[in-house]
Image 1: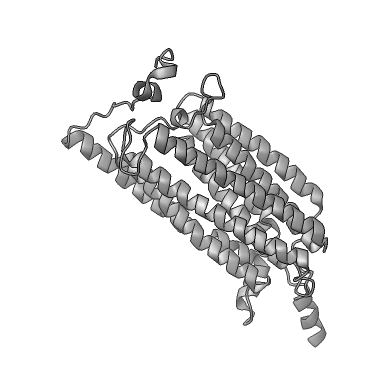
Image 2: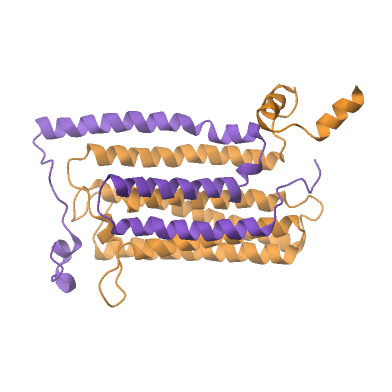
Length: 227
Length: 126
């Protein structure tokens, strides 16, 4: 009897049965390191914050009878010739995807205990993140200085365009900036070997945050830039 | 819990999903060149959901997590769909009243960049 219980504890069943077991076992529900569970719960709460922003944006667009400015034109960029619509935003999207890929590899090498590769890949991820923030700063500058867009108005149409844009992309940019600092701190600790005893879940946890930042951008890209 | 109990998978799946995300992003960007309409919105939402799904499932390992954690992550956001639905209905109603009773022009067009700034791109008439 005891033997069976011990075996089951080692290999808990998966699927719906496992769901019931995990919740009814009178012990910890989530079989992951607590830091990972907490990061996930933080990310769920962050999902609510970003959804509130995006939903209020949707509401603003549907209530505003004033015409919404053409995002595709405003975010166009010219490289000498005709302006290419949304090109900077597309480049920023690819940069975030690339950084997500390098982060996923960092997590993998972390579990393989390849400290050097993990630290380098995390530093590369942070560098991509920093370049994303740099491009965003360029984008904001262009919008404020050249296009005259302000949080309270703009020359093209509905004044809410500016407030929504600066709030949503600003909050996302803040997440990216915080992520860059977070990644660099963890990368440095990986390099120094601080996690040799504790294990490398911390890299996966940092990775969760970073992928989430990429995830939010997917929705911002679809709803703010493509709408 | 041992230190090595985390998510560990062959590298190949990351490379494949990485490439897939690039392709989906390219498609997503390409929708900007399509004409406004239901089909364009279908594609925008399709590529968005596919990208989000692959990021959460593979990069964030939700696909391999135990169901108790997966439901904790994906369950609460369902409430958000109601928020979106309600605010959508309310928003449409507000717009209707503004057009109906406050005399807003339902067909007003925004000014284009060329209208506002003139200069270099005057030849691109809209």
